[in-house]
Amino acid sequence: MNVAQLVSEIKSKKSYLCVGLDTDINKLPEGISKDTEGILQFNKEIINATKDFAVSYKINTAFYEQLGSKGWNIIEKTREMIPSNTLSIADAKRGDIGNTSTMYAKAFFETMDFDALTVAPYMGYDSVEPFLKFNNKITIVLGLTSNEGSADFQTNPIYDPPLYKTVLERISKWGTPENLMFVIGATKAEALVEIRNVVPDHFLLIPGVGAQGGSASEVCKNGKNALGGLLINSSRGIIYASSGRDFAEAARAEAQKLALETQPYTAHL
Image (cartoon, rainbow, N blue to C red; front, side, top):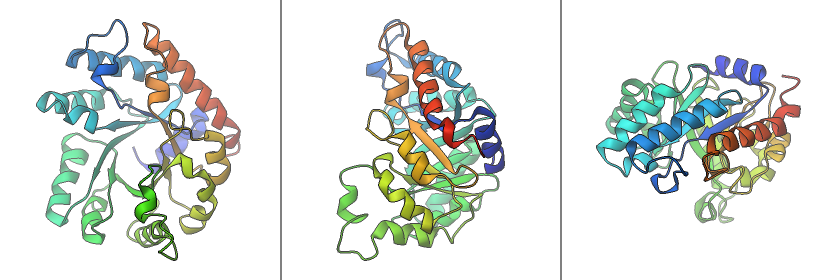
């Protein structure tokens, strides 16, 4: 799935919703076995319950990698469950010197056929450029994150301009809005106006809505561009909306609620 198809899906569903499949085996709800088969059943039911509102699904690979080879198998099978009309994201935050980055890109873009992959930019151009070489794939680079430690480097006042702005400005020149996106934390919604001055045309993946306290409407107001340009991710707030047997219905209700919150900002796309 490419960016043009993603924009079409956003217009069709009137939604910016990205559902994060951060599936923790210890948090599986009542009626789901706490094993690998249970994880797959849970993921399948969540996807089926939310696909009317989601334009993207993001698999946080750490929740599966902890299970070893079985976890990688779950990643591949879950990837196969994601509808072809939604963007599939591997949230793996890879990034290393050239040859290693190429191998990471092959793993996620070719072997597992994800549409997009999150990448850490700290090592610079030669660690990001290999991902950008893959046709019809999207590299999503960490820009401004929601975690407390982001103040150590990204927004540390010793840097003028802030380091995150330098990262966004420089990296935006390495690719295009068709093959490059940026991660911006939802709890940094007030910074989105300035960020749009730096990267006006790129899509932004916005985690942190829901359980982390970010506001979808604030993100839309400050961060949308002419094509929408947003993927608003909610993970725990949707997939763990209920710990009972009604977990799928509860997830659907939360997905619809978030989609409706963003609808006024998709109406004129």
